[in-house]
Amino acid sequence: MTKPLTRPLALLAEVTYRCPLQCPYCSNPIELAQYRRELDTATWVRVFGEAADLGVVQLHLSGGEPLVRRDILELVREASRAGLYTNMSTGATVADDAKLERLREAGLDHLQVSLLDSRPDSNDWLAGAASFDRKRDAVLGAKRLGFPVTLNVVLHRHNLDRIEEVIALAQDWQVDRLELAHTQYTGWAFRNRAALMPTRQQLDHAHAVVERVRAAGTDGLNIQHVLPDYYFEQFPKACLQGWGTVFMGVAPDGFVLPCQTAREIPGLEFPNVADHSLEEIWFNAPVFKRFRGTEWMPEPCRSCDRREIDFGGCRCQAFLMTGDPAATDPVCHLSPDHHLVDEALQEAQQSDPPLHFRVMSR
Amino acid sequence: MKEKRLIRLPVLAMGARYRWDKVRNQHQLVFPEGMIVLNETSTAIVRLCDGRSADDLIATLKDTYPGSEPADDVHEFLRDLADRGVLRDKAVD
Image (cartoon, rainbow over all chains, first blue to last red):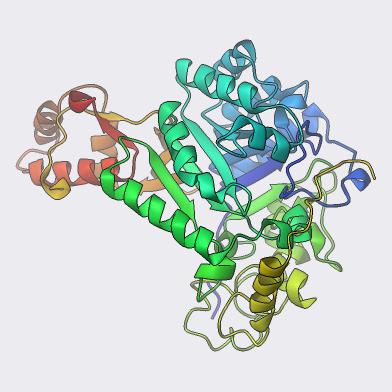
């Protein structure tokens, strides 16, 4: 049973790992200092053209902080010219009105601004830098310029109790979308798991707030609420809708990843855009075939009715928790490793360790 | 209540735009974090969400497809787009 191979819909271009912020749940690699090399402008432009030819619809320019690239306007312009729908995820601390206006002119379709908390002091503490005021100014400036704006808030123990304030802020700033995404425990977040994991009571409260706000009507604000899989899911997330199915990422140094945190899995060999086209990589690179489809699956996934619904869950999470990237995601209640989830929750309830903030040098 | 409302002045939400996908040979409505594949009729509807009224849009479709009665389908499709946040009713803004 082989299904026709799909083409990717989304390309994540992490154009740099440099960032003025130090968010303790960053999805960039822990060993940031190993990855200082960055692709030049011409190579990124070629990659965007290859992505469009391969069938990519949405480009996500991200990082790190994409706006620290001096050529970012040219990258946006060329991506847009290639026919890609261009999104940018930014911390927005270096996005003044003039920069935003030039991004708009360059053809950027959608701006996503991260916010760490509803209160300036807590936002700035979590970001490791004074940034709340600049984020607010950037959001308001972007709205004045006619950008659709998404506010991205990663939720965890230290901000979850203010979810109602976060929603009120999103309404006050008149953003179009609010993404309330619970921390996904890979990368820096896995390292900080015991310090970030909320309590069951916090989650129940937050869930009730979102339901109440939705029922009352959000007046045009589109609220996406991504639940934490450790607590709420009987089954794992359909991570990326399956490995090598709709998504590919290109890291700052040109390595092509089936998932932006896949570098955490040892033993995988990643191809580089310097050596192959995106098309060759998508269809032929062993790393994209490694967990594609259902052939690789162990039991209980292999014979499970849901194998093409959740695709065995997240490979990075499976590796980080069990040491085996081909294991069933332990979040699944059918996983033989499911006790690891309960143990992680217990550990988090019983301790309050300090946060390790993201740093580039050791 | 929501099921019955009529959208009178349909305009695409900020950031939503029509796109022809040359690789897949399909019409698409692309928007932040999403995409809808359009068939011929829905493409015609989306491309007419240019500031004209829904009544005008329906009349135009009738001219394009003689003998059709698209009103109910158009309103349902517009409501569906509005529920997904990719269409606004300028009449109620």
